[in-house]
Image 1 (cartoon, each protein chain N blue to C red):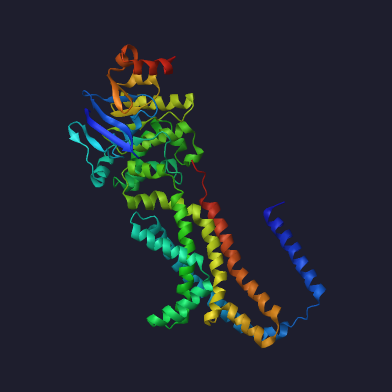
Image 2: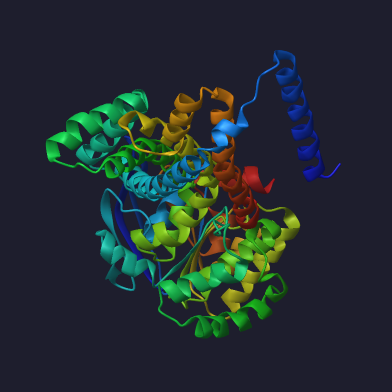
Length: 242
Length: 245
């Protein structure tokens, strides 16, 4: 994918969250967004995922601009997958039914075809034994892996992952990161917001540092993490990597 | 102690206290006089069942539509819902019945007492239903709607597949409580001379001068309707329960 963002502005109740943000990537598979809380990275991701419409500015993937009206945005959201920090599984449905819902009701598969589609991924990620449990009966790591699968089984063009491990303990974090690492190895395109710098270094083709509503630094992961000369960025890494 | 046994013990103790109270006042029972009119009790009870059922269905429909109006982003639609709910909840059912029957039904030429009674009762109960439903809808976290949008569900699908199934579980207990109230409130329809359960009991009392013998069967008749409803609600609740994730 190639992402082009120009002059992106987003405001909530008069507070400017994105301030003429600009970012143009090369042809890459994985983009990682890092930066301080409240810096605008989740807001940016929500716009990229077609969940929010910016006040001003433009976003294009592979030269295709994102639409602004809700009907066209819904059509766009059906072609991508989004994973939230708090999993947001549907608590009244089993893990399996959480996976089947978008396949059957959005993508028009028959229930039988949808079951066929999810069988192999459930086994590959060791979730088949938990398929009939409700979200409340799953661990955080299992919930998040089901949430990732729910986004994945519709065969999206790319995934948007918003701090998928921030609500998890280290063991479950490792379990989810391993899954994302596997997706990277299989060629899945994604944009990931994370605080896991070691993982960011491993999977990012390009890394963007978002702070104060702008992209303050952008480039290869190692370049930004190790050799960035911008004080604001260096301070941040100094604090969280110390 | 198992739950059913606990219930039984409490009912037995309560019955003993009531029986002791009756024994102290030396009430002169006259069941034979009231037994003559048993047919009226059955007739009245069946009428109450019929009009409660009709009002129950109608009040759920009215409550559902009003809840959607209350959640509307259009000020005029929201205002219609809000004014209706506040007017109905803020005034006595008795007054609503009298106005509904003598003024509104008279003005539009609706002469069927039963229909007017059901309609007023449904409008009354519907206002409470609306608030219950609105609360249920509002209790579903924004994250759930976000998630539904993210997978590409339309607003209607979001309501049908995500919001309503969760909200229904939340509102089941208060809705059951409201339905129990509705059944008991139907007794007020006696003031517009609908020959329902309470009116028949009043008439039997007037014929026999046996107040308690007329009204105790009345209480039993209502319990016969409300207890199974409560039990059904408890059973449904336990069947559809899930922990919030």
